[in-house]
Image (cartoon, rainbow, N blue to C red):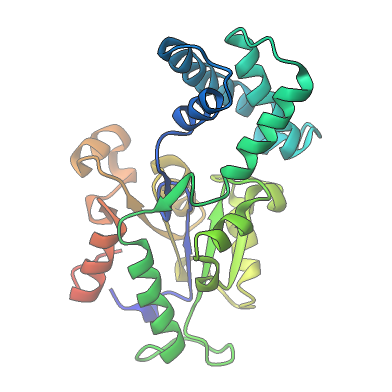
Amino acid sequence: MSLSRFRLITFDVTDTLLQFRTSPGKQFGEVGEMLGLLGSGSDKKQLTAKYKANWHRMNKAHPNFGLKTNIGWENWWRQLIVGSFRETGALESDEKLLRIADHVVDIFKTSTSWQHCYGSVELLNYLKLKQQIGTKGPRIKNEGTPFKIGVISNFDQRLETLLRNMKLFQYFDFIVGSYDAGSMKPDPEIFLKAMESSKFDDLKPDECLHIGNSTRIDYLGARHIGWNSALIHEADPKELSVKYGEEISAKHVFPSLYELHKRITTGECEL
């Protein structure tokens, strides 16, 4: 694959660039245990299950972290966390549970909760170097810049802080989070927002590449608006093809960013 084909390359964050050290539900249970709210292993498992159930419920009732229903992302998380504790029988005061909720929100934007996905830093270093020195035959008219690198993520307003804390912020020319953008992947609007953020006046959809881990939200979301896309997924590409038919190509599926990076550098990547 020649980088000169693309003027915009964007990344998803969760399970693409960064992944939780353990599942969010398990970490949530560990916080409750650490703060003395749980009395046994079964309580911890119950809290983890309640967290997962409430996550899905909150997403359905208050999409995009409460933006559309005007509760705000902070209260969205407080309702999820406090509600999960209450459903496991926690008798602490609302004030104490709210303090715990705010503590959880804070640690979920640090390296205590997150780690880099395999190959993410190496690929970003490679792309940033290519961007700085230019590529052969760049199709760019904008101030000599070969391409722009960005983020498109369904995330609340902690996104920039998280990327800074994880030492990734410096790689990107812009960041588009769903909460600030007012729309979530796979809505075309958030991809259009990224094109606008690139500052390329004549940018075309087929000059854009999005890299993410969700077949529906990232891979198909980008392709349905005319972008190119790469899917970072450990599943057998043949299994994905059976599920999604001709909408997905095995040539676009990579088990990790490390593998995508390797195939780019060896010329074996077909996007």
